[in-house]
Length: 454
Image (cartoon, rainbow, N blue to C red; front, side, top):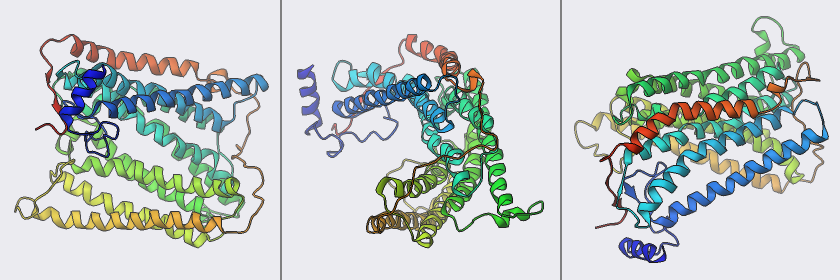
């Protein structure tokens, strides 16, 4: 093995200890087989995944210890949701791990010189979309467990919240093949199945939007809000958590609408692998998710540091900049995607008459990018200033309470075993045949292309 790695290093003309810094791992997020980078890059990724599974195990142990100390009691919603997120991560990471261990690393170390790129794409699709829901989980936890408390309200329904997280756990996994709509190696039948399951992901989001809107209405009514819609003006709009929630919902709405296009085989065709996809992903992750990460950081900061963040005006400015910047960045990407601009290109020649009409949109998106940069810098400034603030006692950290706090919860809503089994079963059902069909089909491998090879 050492000799093979040494040979691979010599062919790469670089020091494999720092493959990313040397440009020997320029294979992007999806690994891009048959493009093959330095072996140590892939080995490092595998070790990161294995290390993350220790965290998953610790989450399970913590849940077991809590249940043993509180027999028959409802698991706190935040803990229930966080453990569900850890199980989702553990299972979704397996797809990329199988791709690395069974296909890419053997080629990277020189044991093979060919790779089945189509099978690799199917393996990665196992991870590709569900990982977004793993990133989304903390945002949804904040929706339920932090926002109502922060604005003076209560969670409308603890039961609906648990169902939402269960649905994410079950239906977020068997959907990834919709990313291979344009790939001929996967049959139309399984593409349809994955498209249908992708549509089901809207259910936990719709449940969440309804429940959280009801929860903030409770807060507004408690503040004196009256009338059919008059309660909206009674909401604490000067509260950064309320502002972040509103922005997150707007970005989630736009991003989700684009996702409905992506999950449809017919509608996906004109936007497949265009900048539309880039815009959609950024609206969901960089927009709806990250803006709530900022709000979570602001909420936790006094408890972690013992120092208050007193300049709420500056915090609101930072959130506004991020919201506006994300809109200005992503909307032009959607437009040029409709026009056919491909994504993941190193260079666009806007002097070409065919591309010239897209130049203005790309320029506008760059302005949005600089706005996001300013917001990110301002976020760091706010935290740095907070470290110089006088010490304060923030008190114990509290999560939101439900309107009717549960005293007992059905076992199906208080544990994960049934739902993890269903998640695994659906994934095996939806991926088993495509993977086996491709793995057993002869003559589908192509020669590997090594990064940096001449």
